[in-house]
Length: 270
Ligand SMILES: Cc1cc2nc3c(=O)[nH]c(=O)nc-3n(C[C@H](O)[C@H](O)[C@H](O)COP(=O)(O)O)c2cc1C
Image 1: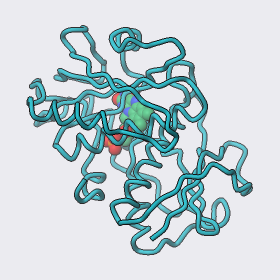
Image 2 (image 1 turned 90 degrees about the horizontal axis):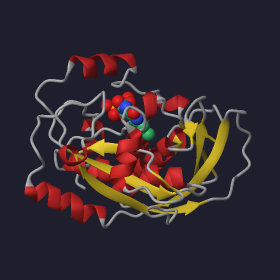
Image 3 (image 1 turned 60 degrees about the horizontal axis):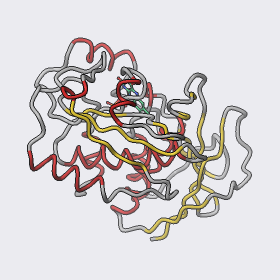
């Protein structure tokens, strides 16, 4: 994907669509891309395209959409993080083609989507997204919603990315600053941005800073999905700068607040 930082910054949730189906070319590109998506935990995420009219699907926050993509994953440790990582790859690819998306984990008739997606035993379908072209003008509902959750702003770098210990702001090198900026602009449930990173001894350690009310059986932990999305932006950001990454899962044992949880670490080579 060319100019990842631009793609990341231009992506915004789209809830108002123009009512047109995807072009045949775009639909094929999406179908082909889905087959290539992997994640660092090797937990397969299955993507299913769902026709809006065929299944009578809808969401109270959306209008004008004709097609959705739902993701299914086996319920197991790290499935939510893997889901966030894999689904966000598709979101960024769609953005690179000019196709609008929005992560939807709550505001949908969940049972209808799960039935249409053919949810199997021990699987969950945490989120879906429409795939379509943005309408020229946002619905009033969408505009109000964006204001309510301050969707156009993000927490500042110094409160998200730390050096050596929790709360001690990191001063990144120029190329890492770009990559962390990509992480900062990732989408998250209710725009909570629950990811934190501590850079220590050459390794980036990812944590979830938990809020209440984001865990349930149907979705897993939505904020772990958010951390998976942040991890996707980080790893793709490193790749876009020609840096190799290696995923590690040993908790470095750094002291963290009671409402935080260690998730994963990444070592980065130039
Ligand atoms: C895991 C997840 C679940 C989300 N669920 C919903 C949802 O149910 N309804 C909705 O309107 N937006 C949902 N969103 C979209 C967020 O509200 C949006 O990404 C955030 O406010 C930032 O805005 P932006 O995507 O335009 O940058 C979800 C986002 C994520 C990452």
